[in-house]
Image 1 (tube, rainbow, N blue to C red):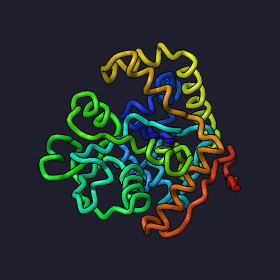
Image 2 (tube, rainbow, N blue to C red; image 1 turned 180 degrees about the vertical axis):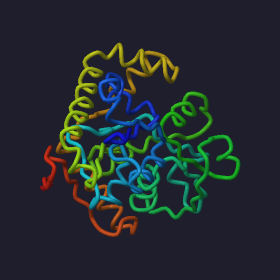
Image 3 (cartoon, helix red, strand yellow; image 1 turned 120 degrees about the vertical axis):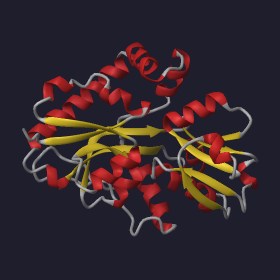
Length: 286
């Protein structure tokens, strides 16, 4: 039987609070879940193969005319994010002329790094994109970018490099939080599924609230799925926000503006939120 909504789920720990207490059984006859890394989910959403999911912020910017953002859901860091790192053989200010290897698993962090290195620091570097493996990447590059659980693992196991948290660099330069992912829905999927989407959205919000209220269970869930220790996960999750506040929205639109000025996006982007109806037209403005 054909189901009504296809929902993507990023297979990274940073989205765990939104999914940990989500009751999939309740929706089992109405939705399909697909586990993917961010780059896969970005592509599948853009192709129309996924209806709802936590997509990279940059991908939202590329396809803003086709998407709404779901209110109250994001992966945001107001300072250190602790899972998006530049590993470098020398200090970041000495990377002019360097080769930087980029993970092939996300667009937001890749373009954030380009903004930081070129726009903020005035460095000229060469980039190459490859599978996220620190040791392989560093064999032929001066620095490399890793995100998500790949970055967490590399940070734990490799202390020989200069390490820079991209969200911290962004915050220091702009004063804004950095939103790495938003939960988006394709506009084409809403008209026939508005009621179901409202139920799913409410279930996401409820899972997020319960996870943040029952922090011990969130940490236990992270350890069970990804390993690590309670102290590390406590620091990690407390450094993230999932609420997509007005300040988060402003920071994201500033990121889009920087990307536009660098030619990474064809135009500035405003964030449009779904208002819960079948024909949403709600736009957040300054």
